[in-house]
Amino acid sequence: MLAIGVAVHLATMIIAVQGGLSAADILGRTRHSASWATFYGVFVLAVAIHAPIGLRTIIAEWLGWRGRSADAACVAIALLLLALGWRAVYAVTR
Amino acid sequence: MSMDRSADASLDVRVSRSGGGNAPAHQQSFTVPRQPSQTVLDVVTYIQRRLDPSLAYRFACRVGMCGSCAMTVNGKPRWTCRTHVADVARDGRLDIAPLANLPVVRDLVTDMREFFDKWARAKGQFAGTATRHDDFARVAPTSEARRAVDEAIECIGCGICYAACDVVAWNRAYLGPAALNRAWTLVNDVRDAASRERLAAVAGDAGCHSCHTQGSCTVRCPKKLSPTASIAGLKRAATRAMLKGSL
Amino acid sequence: MTTLTARWRNRSHPAYWAFLVHRLSGIALLVFLPLHFSVLAQALAGETSLDGFLAWTRQPWVKVSEIVLVLLLAAHFTGGLRLLFSEFSGWQREVHAVMIAATAGISVFCALAFALNLL
Image (cartoon, rainbow over all chains, first blue to last red; front, side, top):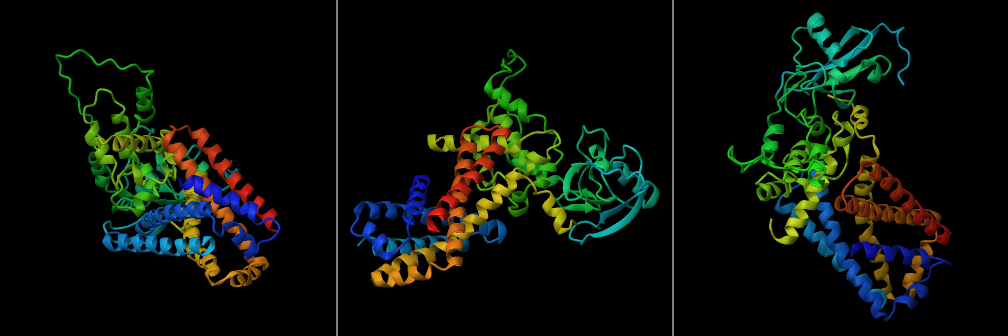
């Protein structure tokens, strides 16, 4: 699922930046768009789950930080990404 | 690719010395005369017999069959009896240290207990059900399962892959490439009866899913095995079992 | 006791570099994400606010960073696909080397496509 999300996002970015990027360009595309909102809403969710899982392994292996506090930190980051991400999605699609 | 250094009649050898346990290691320098077809094991033996009898090191067969002589040579874990000085000595320099990721008993000798304990924890032993009264098992050597076993079965437990693996260094509980490789051969052994317990043993945080496919084990294995491939197989088997709910 | 360079000698092979790229790109992307989200959320303050920010992004170093970020995302993404493929499809050592090369190539291609459109 993430793979499709990333592929679409990458392609979109490559196409979108053609000819310069302005707020009107972006928002013109995304405002009031249920499909973009859904796509990016799901994308953000997937990333918010995926990234902290990777982070958990890295902090365990490279910082030696394991156990409940490490897990809690990762959950916190997941929630942070979710909050910021959905706020951004709302900001451009409302 | 080694330059012709026959003009250099001697080697500058740095050997890691330590009292073992938590004692810090220090380097001791020796000058060793070069010989044709000299191996690193020859060098270590010369040092212990002629220069410093207190040097502790391990070897047995000298001919690349037992794996006892594995050490870190210029940063890479190797069989010293099969490592020609001409291939590895840069500018006549050799750095010799014990195998990484294992406690040091003394100097170049490591304590391999944890290596074999993990082998046991990965359920690396065959569990049979047949008795002497049963007929021989028939296993087709060309079957996919048996070919998978044959590609991984030649491991002699030398510990080089374990020393080469960063995940072993970063995650003390990680079972390691050799133990997991052996588990894979047993998972594919149609005569073995302990598959479920074995998959459960290798599927946790300390098991196959901690492998990051760095591939150092495969690059360094003197028997040209691929623990990376075996562990990938375990990941598949474990995932399948999990999805089927049989884990 | 091995020296720093000696330690890295054991890690000088493609599969290890692929691992390192995957891990480091993941960390970089994770660090970048909150910034990215915050920027977009500027739109909450209105179009002109977002436009103002976008004008700032036309500076060369920002553009270069954006290209690098696309490269990192493409590298992380293709590396992940490579891992999924090699773990689930069975394994051949020869194929693996090719796949690492292919993922590197595709990542560079994506970054270049982005760069060409951006500049």
